[in-house]
Image 1 (cartoon, rainbow, N blue to C red):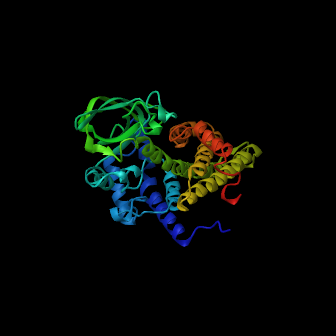
Image 2 (image 1 turned 60 degrees about the vertical axis):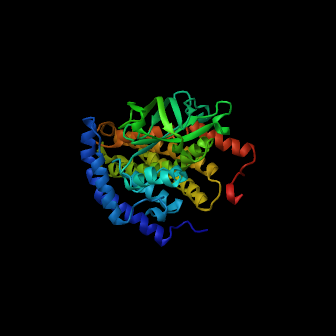
Image 3 (image 1 turned 135 degrees about the vertical axis):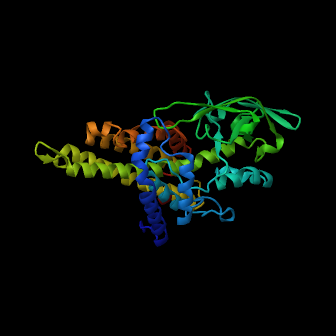
Length: 390
């Protein structure tokens, strides 16, 4: 059994780390200053400029098929790169990406929505969550009613990432109320903002914020159905599923960076004539954090490896999401404790991480939903204790 990275994996990981270190991390102090002024830490134009620089490094479209100009990287490599992205709190991501379910578009839709999104000319958002349907996504109520060659949409979506900036949304709506959304009653639509939906900013404890999307008699041409009628919930689950190993990958990078700060501080900060790292209380916090970081790493990489094997990744991804999200919250909490009052200030990114990582236990499936999935898989015999090694 070989736990080492291949030469290719190490080279790509190290190149991504080099780019983040040289091009993105130097922007951190300015980003903190801007955020204290309630401004975006990174403007959209600056993000685009960084993405073009990254493209020269060879990083463009990590998961995008080669026929669309992307790298089409295996899941393990994508996980490694998302960990590197987590090392900086600047809200940067590599360009050339599009929502995975946009590849279900027909050729006309690909020209109108997919290709411009990959090139960065258009911004998309995915909308399934509603005020009364968060974890229970099958309970969505936003209706789409057929009217000739159009569908008329009415309802509200909420907590939509990129909803304030998006040019179009992929919205899942009820098209057959006689069926549950999860049993063919919902359909996905590609809806330009020019068709009439509006967004309302939602203030959160983190930086930036999601949006509510309001649909009032929004008319959408029949040709804008993504996939097939009744396929909306299935597509929605495919969209959500991808995040369940990438989110904890990102969390791992945050935890590693924060733990590194704690180690440096423990080796330099003195109290009562000695480095605080000589105190057992500090040592145990560092040790517990290191153990949890390593445990999370292998759960996450196993989930990504499962994707690359072509196996059903849901069980492994749920374990990675559940443990990884909890891990980063505990690590950042300890790192703040080690830094004391300084960690609580906005001079350092620790308090920012403290707010940021709390969301990881909620979005793309709450802790409780992951526990439900994991226990259900075991109880129904969908998986064995010990997984593929059982």
